[in-house]
Image 1 (cartoon, one colour):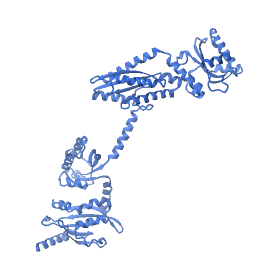
Image 2 (tube, helix red, strand yellow; image 1 turned 90 degrees about the vertical axis):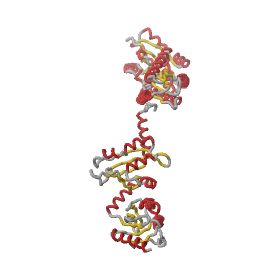
Image 3 (cartoon, one colour; image 1 turned 45 degrees about the vertical axis):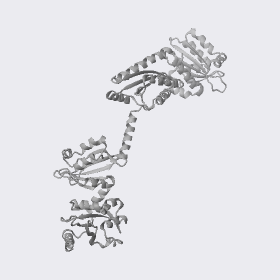
Length: 575
């Protein structure tokens, strides 16, 4: 019993000899039993209702439960209510343990530094230590506020000394503390952390290279260096992206190379960044009109296929027939409509393949799923669907197996497409021009959209006139200057102006053709029967011309017509 009292007196002497007066509370504590006695306690920190608590661990737990400790710091402070945790740290040789937190006061919150001091002779046989609480000074408060802000961002903060490979935990999870804090070297922590399966296998090499202590010593030769490493870290729901930052501490000198290690979760942020990068990359790899992959992406994928190899590859090379004619006769918007229709059809038939628009009217599909016969069946379906929209394609298919050049396979498919295209135009060279005629006639007779016609294609023609057969009057869409003079001289009679044109510009053997058209009664009957009248004639300058007369469908009296004069040598208008 006397020995026990001596131990108590030793502890009290240790308190009086070692500690200053600037503590809020001091208590001597038996780590094994939890028995405690306050040696000092500020009056304004009296804990009402705690008088019956005889165990220091229960005392600390009650402080947290009463919300005397700020919620963000409660978890860290609550660890000291666990006897096993405290005993392990002290009996393993730690003589000083410190934890700062904010506690509630009558005026708000204040930073408090809680600590445990153990005398040299402290052991399981002599388990007496000092628990202390003191108000943090202004410098410490500033630092703690900064660390609290950082702690909200980072879930692990360590202080590392490169020279002796040591570390100090500023913030870490309970699990990591229990597993790694007994280690003497940070390099051992990093090694064990990886060996425990906490790093994704795909990132393990990069993680080990980044945390190599010898490499870090060579790298950190000044205080202006910061290094970062992104890796996937094990969590309860799999692996999440984290970032480790190493930056020199304010204590850093060439002889005392102290770093601060920060680790934060960046999973959602990094996933958003990856998605944004993919969207930007995809934007530059897409054709703006059809949203298919563009030629740049096509070349990249061909090179990638060639480099990494393939087992089977079937290439479909497509050229859309008649884009040039549509653009010239109906305008580029009609050409764009055709290209989009073809692109949408290809996307429907190749939902899981990469479809490319590599030129104005050229498309390519690279398939590692379809055989040559399978591709032929799909092409037949595509042709059938496009014909319903009056569009046609030329196509070439080439199949190759591994070790064949991807570029040669694509080149062979293109050559077959060219052959198919030649057959298309040899079969009926004037077919596309007739289709353009029909489409243009549809625009003119159904829409009566003179402004559309004038803006897009009127410059292709020698003259375009809307003529009322009952009144012999014309409304011109596009008129050359000389014909305007003929109209003025003939008092704006269209038939008289046309006769003046024929007398001056048309070779005699063709004048009879115009006389037939100027018999308006006969012309109206023929238009009612056939919808249009068309003939070729030669001018005195040896130019071949084409005149087409079309009856408009939507007129008040049914006798308004459109007369279209075109230069036959341009080979883009009616024959």
